[in-house]
Amino acid sequence: MKVEPLLYGDRKVYTVSAFNRGVASWVARLPSIWVEGEVTEFRRQQGWQSVFFTLKDPTDGACLPVSMPRGRFDGLRLELTDGMSVHVFGRPELYEARGVFQLRALSIEPLGLGAILAGLERLKRKLAAEGLFAPERKRPLPVLPRRIGLLTGNEAAAKRDFVTAVQSRFPAANILVAQTYVQGQAAPGAIASTLRALEREPEIDVIVLTRGGGSFEDLLPFSDERVVRAVAECAVPIVSAVGHEQDTPLCDHAADVRASTPTAAARLVVPDERELRERLDAARAALARGAGAALERARSSLARDRERLDRSPALLVERKRASLEAIAGQLQALSPRKTLARGYAIVRTDNGIVRSAGDLEAGGRVEVELAEGGFGARVEVTRP
Amino acid sequence: MSAELTFEEARRELEQIVGKLESGQATLEEAVALWERGELLYRTCVGKLDAAQGKIEELGKRVDEAKP
Image (cartoon, rainbow over all chains, first blue to last red; front, top):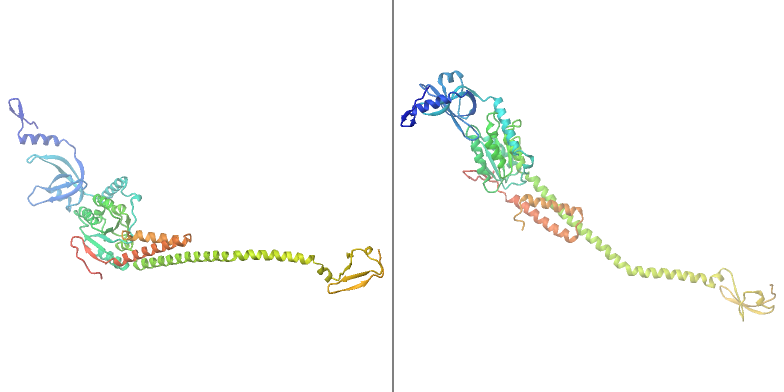
């Protein structure tokens, strides 16, 4: 289609209609393509030639108007609702009457399980590459939280299960409950902002994110990038208890600990009070025992020292006495009395002790000394 | 003194002290000091347990509920 400008001197000027037509014909040469996004502002009315909706990029909110001839749309038999993720096949066009760029849809496919899973897998890989799921980011849970933040949906069951389990273990636990939308289009944003509000509250030492069981789609908000990031950035340790045992929404990977149920989460965040008190008492008893043992050790070593002290002068006397006795024994052995006792006798003359018969003369007088007493005698005969 | 300690810190230190005392290496002076410190930590822990009130509040509403 030829677009003719008006001429004002050398200036070429296009009417709005001509401009739109020109751009439209240029846009119309673009190929038909598939676009993925979330349906918002879906509008369909009797009498309208087309149905309209806006396709929104969930990550940054970028928007694209979409229109589809009503007959073709009705032929698809789609229950299109806001928040639904879809693939739209269409060609880009400029709606000339209003100068609005849009996608003229030829076909719409709700994102099937396969596509959703593929999207989740991509997101998971991306966030893992950023280190959001790294084991070294995991923080230990407090033993005794001053206050527990509970983020839950409006359904009663998960909250009741958690609170009941907490109170049975630790009756005096303080819990701050924050309820928000956990399902539907508004859920991801609501969960992320409620989480941030909760972590700013005073004395919150741990947060539990919980939601009862639901379908795969019901749990999708807990795999939303905004929620996963909010969980990863949470200022206090966070426990994820979403869905049932078999469910693993992405927030589970970003949380510090994952619990399979709200009840299991309760067991993780509060100690068993009775057990805790018993352990404290046991520690106290061990303390007293340890101190007592130290005292006992000190006392007995003191007693040993004192005994040694007491005994040391005594030992000296003892040693002297022993050596004295040894000398006395020797003296005793040398004493002639001992010899006499065995039946020997000492013979003396006026010249002293007689050791040889040659010292004697027959008829000479001798004195004989015995062990007991003695006598005088005369020598009758001598033998050499 | 130990008012600033959290329950965890107090309990961890208490357990370390018990370990030291049980190893039997402490002198009498050390043992007495450890025992005194341990007793204080024990009372800190029990005090914190006793101080918890069992409040359930709602964020936004802040309605205090009596503990059941």
